[in-house]
Length: 555
Image (cartoon, helix red, strand yellow):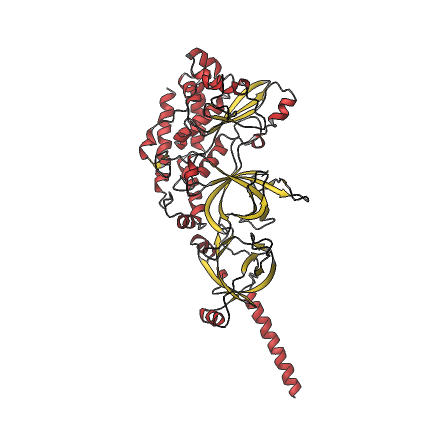
């Protein structure tokens, strides 16, 4: 009888343990336990706070961590109301004394996770939008750790310093990119070296970066490493744009998307004469850095050009090149002939930088820009005969119209590229907009942000010289082409409804991901504004002004 009772008790205990396990892991299989505050305090009273490093993983991938707030972050699809079905796991780390630069080095000891609430019972989209944090204990044999978990709707990028140095002596970082889409390879890892980028923006508290992805070889040296980051392109060269001047943080992405639809593919070469970009959140050495735009640079690969060195070796009739207008300067033909203005900068003339792997330091390299400047300074007849002879007329119209539509006053005489292509054995030029975060009612200003809202510019034209004179003189029926192009745009992406919807989508992206609040908390003195009503009103009013301006020019 006694044996039967023991057997029955064992069976009951087994059934209870199975039920408990099912209850704890639930259908989501989150791999964590939940306890009330009283239970949490009891556990803390019987244990000690551990000083060991801790890692939180989702489906085996180490998550981004902000050390100051003891918070881990997990990017999720914020458009899907259902919680992702993935398992969380935690590990205490016995540090490796040979390398303390990365918490993931050293022996990992699995811990038990004890949350104060089951996050899967909370509305997912509200939790993401509000940046709701979920507290948990990590329990190990040597003590416990107190942490929080936050879900975001934006992809994330983390940098961690390593003991390695790049060929220029700078520190090499380990780089991890986390996508919100967990299907397939949602985490990408490699090494990178980086440098600060920008001009006036270098004074900002929040810095923009240029990244050069690397992989380590067997001999311990590094070589280029192409990675497809967030589906943008497969390459080793990337930009992280800090977006600090723009009080909405969406203007650059808005303009990139618009140009990609109306002008970037308006050419014969089958490439994107613009950039690809995605909004992300960034951590550096376990410190939250805010919202960035991850961007593909406008370079030979983006535009489908061969390296300059290769073209020179093959003695091509036309050498295809890229120029970047970085500094504001009027078009003067004298800038592109004679001695270099600065012998220490053989790649610079007239506000432009010559890009590419080979700089010959001769006048021939600058001849395409000399021709434009010379035509702009010539009489009407000479100008009319030359401006479309070496430049794509539709591209000139597209650029001029685009700057009017976005109120791109900061692009009036800088912040664009000029690309020379071989078209039937003759040089042919294309312009590409760049750096468009000061747009849609923002202008350059002499303040700490180098920008401000100025509603009065809504009825001011942008005088973009390469096309302005062509339109006014109606070269090759430019006015008809202008009117036709604008009518097409206004029925499409630049209709009032379309532009409003596009702004709404981006506002949703930065705010309902929770990122906008985190950005504001990270930079309390940053140029940030919660109310987006200004950009909505300005965009619609600006398009109405361009309607009238185009009609006036085309009479």
